[in-house]
Length: 373
Ligand code: SF4
Image (tube, rainbow, N blue to C red; front, side, top):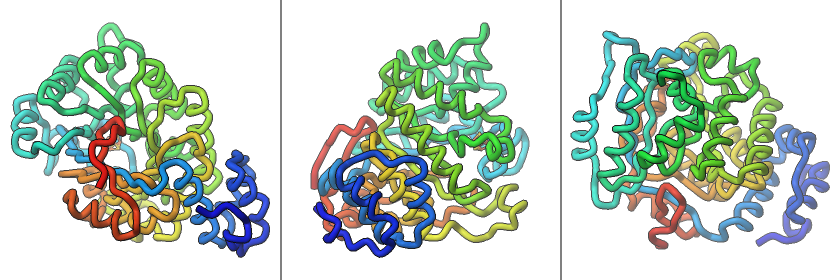
């Protein structure tokens, strides 16, 4: 591991004080974070992130056997970046009853599968019992249920009668078997942006509060950030800072997952006349800065579905220690233009990690190590 400034070879000399702090495992300020976003010396930023990564996990890189369950694409929220949502009766709509879900699990399940990750729409008519039965039924089938974004938890409080609190909703889901939560719905915390891209979704304060309550109940969660649309670099960093503050308070997050905006089939892409994906350099810079700033998160995740397996492999040298996993049957990113496959095999994930000299570790939804390769 690099331990001195001379080994690091910093090209942008204004980064030297920051490099010093990273080598000494000291926390960076907002101003220093912006310096990392504004420098052209991305190789130094990546190397600094790699130092932080190695300090956390050594040579290990993690993946999971995960099945995506999107039991419906019916959604009334209308986020402008989303090509997944449908209204009743629209072409391409689907809506599973519980019996359809069990059939889906029978078809897509396999002995190695540990985690079912639910990503779906905010259905305006399904009742609260449906979600409890869904969570319990998946648990009974031997799966770890990682489900319900903070935005969905907020939605659930609205469909319960009398209206339940975040704590009550989360407690009932936990009793039904929920083991962890994904990090979706965070988008960008800056309300200026949120109002334009996700105005009907839980606000940032609500998103953070749901995760705070979940952590206090012992439910571990993840956190995302949607970038590459109309947000500023300051707003990206502010998003990370707010997550760092909450993690200081609760220590309940497992991983941070930057999600690159997908430029197809959605209103925001049309409005911005955007047809290009985020650049590889921006994706890498973002992951690396996240690794340096979020010093209290165990993992930064490279989400290969959105940034491609090739760039994910490179990101293992820029702060990433988790590449999610098989992600069988992903539909949300693909509905908005993702060009990657609908899943990867365990063998491909292991090869991807081993080819850059890292040690693949198969984990479960709670980051228990199942096998080291
Ligand atoms: S991102 Fe989620 S909440 Fe927003 S419209 Fe799409 S499915 Fe609905």
